[in-house]
Length: 353
Image (cartoon, rainbow, N blue to C red):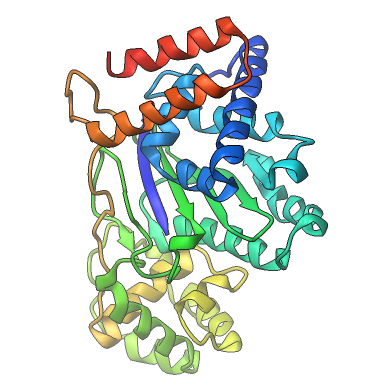
């Protein structure tokens, strides 16, 4: 399930090369110690915790609220562990921008070292991205997708989207051992400051809408089009004139009818079914079956913008302090230089001094 979402202000530029090299070294040693002591699976659980991940980024040298923390920490992990994947039993694929599109190939390339079929991992990677871009339409365009997995098939996803309107980024965490249903309440600890009405097809209260959409996809397109011609279209901020134009609806309905999906997850997995198609189908579910989707933003509490001054929101201090204490213990065992370790401790102390 998703174990966290965080809204972060966009920071431009990138880490200087000398700092990134230190980040790689520190990330490698911390990760190695955790895996040797607790196992690769436990390291994935730590990454899926947004509090731990944020504290980890601060240890490596990032501002606690910087959006660049996500992409650079994932990049430092991937580069730092390169060549040690077999030894540690941990593998990292994907990244920012065009690199994210290479995720399936990178997973496949590690296939000979895995005890599971890599196709299952590739599917999970694609579904995580598809859900956060199409099934949950919250105004953030995904531009970063990092897929971390073990030889036994446990996986985690850390991906990030950008809102052009607010100039903020939102981070999404996934952890496979908690996923019981890709399309119903996959969230566990969702953290962000900015909330609004969104198209949330993975909310529990969207269950009727999901079922109705599947029924619609099994009907002949001309029957559906004829039913909605004389119906009054409701006003929805996520619905545009383009979404409800008959020609576009017909294309969507033909495509889904040809595939005959068994459930909403199967529908999402169809190539070419993206945000516009889901918006149109959600509208049809409301018009025909009176089954409107949820518009609830899945955010539950603030994290990224809270701090020790409690402005504008207090963070969950207990969780954050637990993450910091864990990292302090790990740093004590890490095989890094004295000065690098000292600087890392100083950064930790600034979080809750």
